[in-house]
Length: 95
View 1 (spheres, rainbow, N blue to C red):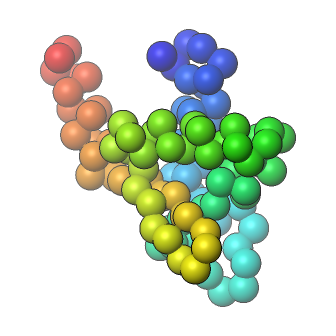
View 2: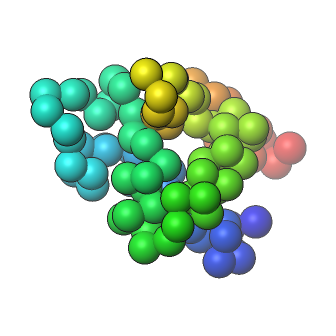
């Protein structure tokens, strides 16, 4: 999966979301690690349409490696570190 352009893009998104404050501007005093990042912010950084970014973010959410939070009319995405660690352990064991 990670060898494809889509896979590399998703891997990049996951890397950025490790330290969102280092990769995305924080509106106001919002703690991006706590609230997450919008699809629009990810799209702007990737240079793609928000719809494309949202598709990648939704895919990662369905996999369980991202969690979402709705604030007002926006959805914020952030890493689910516990789930990512579980997935990593499965791959370390060789399935």
